[in-house]
Image 1 (cartoon, one colour):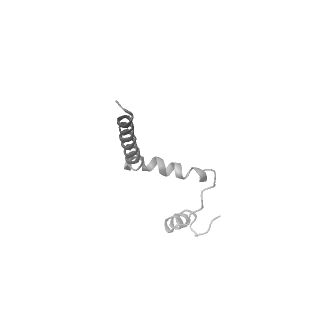
Image 2 (cartoon, rainbow, N blue to C red; image 1 turned 90 degrees about the vertical axis):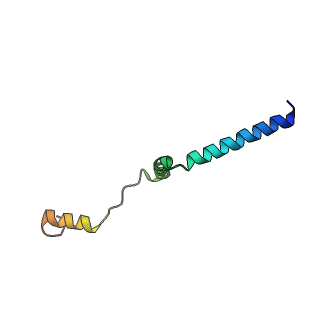
Image 3 (tube, rainbow, N blue to C red; image 1 turned 30 degrees about the horizontal axis):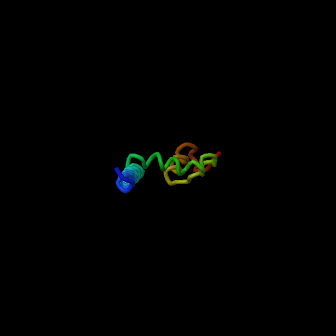
Amino acid sequence: MDTGTLNGIVTILLIVAFVGLTLWAYSKGRREDFDEAAHLPFADDPAPERDTPVERATEKRHDKGGRKP
């Protein structure tokens, strides 16, 4: 086996590895893991307070005045 054949085999193996890694990274099963990893820099930040209509309706039912105690 000469150098050219060896270089060709290595090139083909690297292309197959690249395509396989790309398909793995962009597969739907990995989305949750990558979304979680993307939010890691914000893990120590406090969660923002959300004021949605559902939360407002829930608050009104509990304290019967619509205001927080």
